[in-house]
Image (cartoon, rainbow, N blue to C red):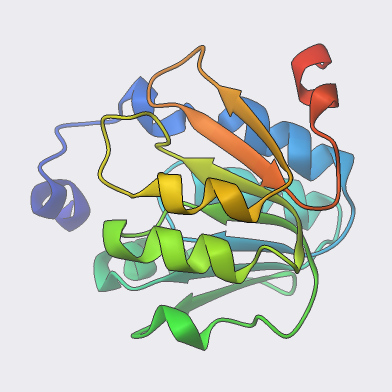
Length: 172
């Protein structure tokens, strides 16, 4: 598979799905549209089924033609998958229940900040200190933050609308 070759992956890794617990919890807690920034083997399929089964709008964006090609087969009445050349061309004119941030490195910080006032929950993958995403510039823009550190890489949920204490107490 070209995506494995291009990214040097020899197979599926547990770390690629460490965002599952928080992403599932946030999607199940809400009922509005979902925005996925960066598609993949794990998040796109998970979000596709969670959204489609509940007839919720899901929009997935990627700037990598290989990932777009891999995931476009999931497009249906509820799930739109788009290839973007510029992350500034996102649908930021509407409110989102959940925004999942997992796209290319240089774009994560500006897109996360861009959704701060339109997303109920923002789920961000790879938030441990080993990654060069400059999340220290993101945190001051959000009132609430919850870090999931049980699996590496970490995943963080931020919100300006909802206290995130419920994430500590909930189980799948």
